[in-house]
Length: 131
Figure 1 (cartoon, rainbow, N blue to C red):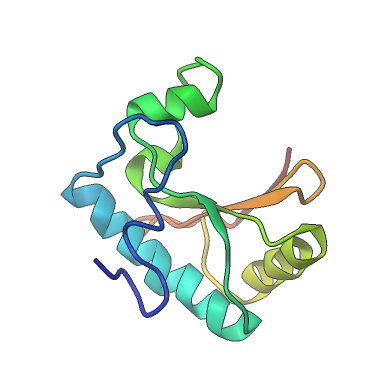
Figure 2 (figure 1 turned 60 degrees about the horizontal axis):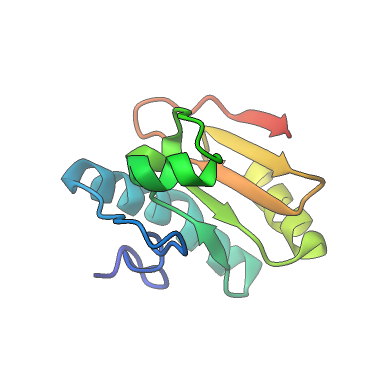
């Protein structure tokens, strides 16, 4: 199932955890919004493919990603994706998102080892964070 021209549901639900990772209808709707409002326009402006390392996460997948800790995450609602094209490219993508697109949270993770972006159709807070 294509969520936008260049992003598929399979790409945004892939996990290496071996755990079930099937989004419900609301999560698919949120993933579609994330793709249409942020990821697809980013890809077109950036001009290159974007490597998604994590999109939707089921409860079990999210727990495994957090080393057993149960943490709330926009990934569990289909509202977030982690992107990694390498540090220099991550900086470029971060700045493009920050300067051109709506987002809820944009996080520089571990000195641009990857970036996290979320989109919330109900309220985008434009939060810039560094973890």
